[in-house]
Length: 155
Image (cartoon, rainbow, N blue to C red):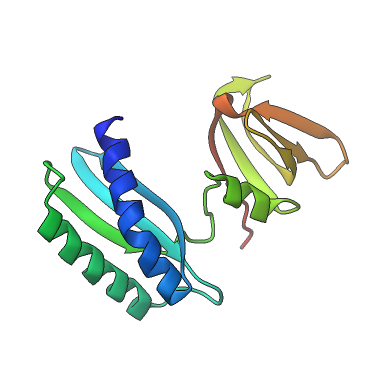
């Protein structure tokens, strides 16, 4: 298991009981390097929305545990937040919850000079994602070709 996967897995295992006791949802945990800085991020949500107090409580408990366990060798910034409006779909539960919802898809490589697609999520499996466009036509994408899929939002 890669170091990043190990860190994410350990943090998830720690957070799950906290999520259950507070009726929160652990959306994702990621350990990523951006512009030379490591970030450990926990994305959390709950019915009706996640508050600043919720975020602070989880952040304090997680921070205390991380200090005690001290298993991450790198210097990093800890962030606990809501996944936001444009929440990425990563796990089975994300796709299941989002069936029938508008999504935006960004591909690694263009198909007919286009990398960005938007439509209604109509189907998915381990290998593919299918969306329906406004004109009723559908397109199926290989998941390995998708750089990002997230809920669409309009302002």
